[in-house]
Image (cartoon, rainbow, N blue to C red):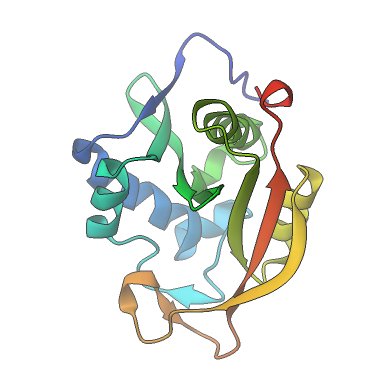
Length: 185
């Protein structure tokens, strides 16, 4: 297990200078053969991009939006995006280096994003969308208090900024969790 509180692990907000490294990390976590080392791969579902650099730059710059990075000794290990969408937080772009998955770093990063939404932005709900076919990922979030809502959103077929689908039945399911500032750390 990685000790997320270890003094050499730094959590910080991403800057525009981080965009190339973030695109590389997110791609390694979800697409192609490199992603198969970890359990978060989408390689059987999608090819191509996982994150568009211009969208990522916008996420870094806009208010009530933070791309959080975890690094050790200058090496980018993980990232996630948390932002305000209406009256709830939204969590996405969750990526942990495939070789470090299952070591506790992801849970630490998720908790920090929940803390930002609950404490800094005073939001009582966190939402996310997960590809419906990703049963193991949905189960991961359920173990962390998220519930399936039964609300589905279409996959953006035809927009290569979000990947090239290998199937024609992809869609997103909305998951949500009630946040309590004192319970999130």
